[in-house]
Length: 320
Image 1: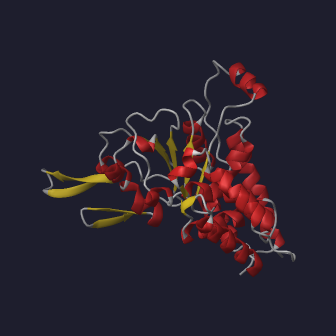
Image 2: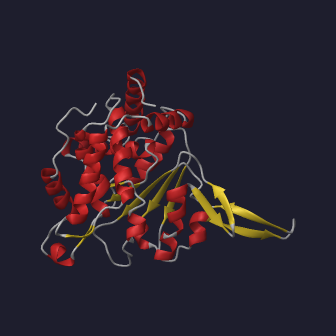
Image 3: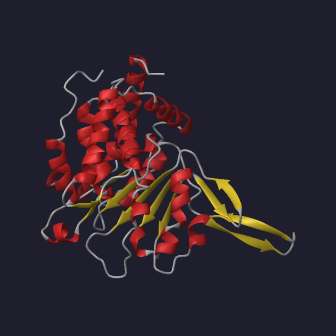
């Protein structure tokens, strides 16, 4: 069932209220805040590739506070074990029973800091929970919190002691983006706030409202011609000369869900080709594996996608 204009307007106003709340702490990053919130309402996850000190931890904390949810932070290190992420079963001598001690993934917003510093075995502990919202330990499956968002970070500069994320792990992230440094004016505002007590952010919505927003976003209308456009865009990533491995079908699904959330955030009941174009980079770029020769020549996945956007014609008829 397609949403009506009243529902779209409600979504737009509620989405803006949450974004305003987050931006009150994360100054000057409105576009990135809206991108991450789009992943949240689309039930996706976010990978941030950033240098230290750009506000990644603050982003996760403030989003959790804004939706009146719980948050946790996992500092990934080479000696981190899978049980440190998911939780472990411990034998209680008094009761003669095994008790499960919940890991930090049992929260609404989980910050996986410097995820590429952990071993592949520990990284894989997130595969099941990111895809299915469940954790299986010692043969028992447990549901994590809902809604559930993983914000993972990796440092693009310091590569010593890091492990490259495998393709299966990258594919679990709906989108990849970067916060980057603030501009000059924003930097001054941040400096001026030095010394002020960090106040708790009041929730803009509750978890029930966020669940309703996710249901609303799912019902945004996508014209078959726009679906065809998304499919052609994804197929073009597989045929590009510089690409060794293109986007999976999961990428097409992620692009569709993200486009629906963007449309609703702009107060529309339907997706337009511009939604697809705007999100193709954040959603698809990290899923592309380039040929070594192309990487050596300085070609980037973002550049490949920019060329694909130019070459793949959008629907010529109205998308409504």
